[in-house]
Length: 160
Image (cartoon, rainbow, N blue to C red; front, side, top):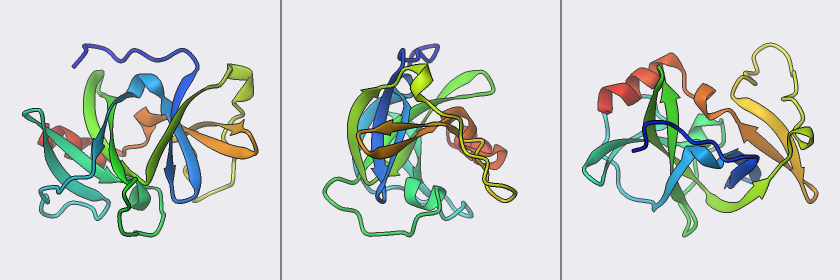
């Protein structure tokens, strides 16, 4: 793994969870894996699916549907694991997120990205970097380094 995350200039990798279109900076995406069986980790949150062997390393895998509050569904032929590198305590760490499908790489200039909406108490928009529009659809651009809570970070570090 590279010693640092190299962020793509205005390039965002898009994927779907449910009918929603999400994006992360292309610098955070390292691989797309087919869906595979995970080894369960006892007493972990429901959205933490478990771990897989990823080229000799342990890769923690989260269910994007459950993590983002979508109902659980059966996987389809398009369901896959997006391998992301996130910065935790100043170090790059890989984690997998199960998504319904991967889409394409889009380029958004900074002025095309609007701030995350402030919906009020109870809604955590900290993990949303901003909102952009592609054709007639909103694209929710995630702040990947803010998605995981301290508890989840400890889970990721524990299996590293």
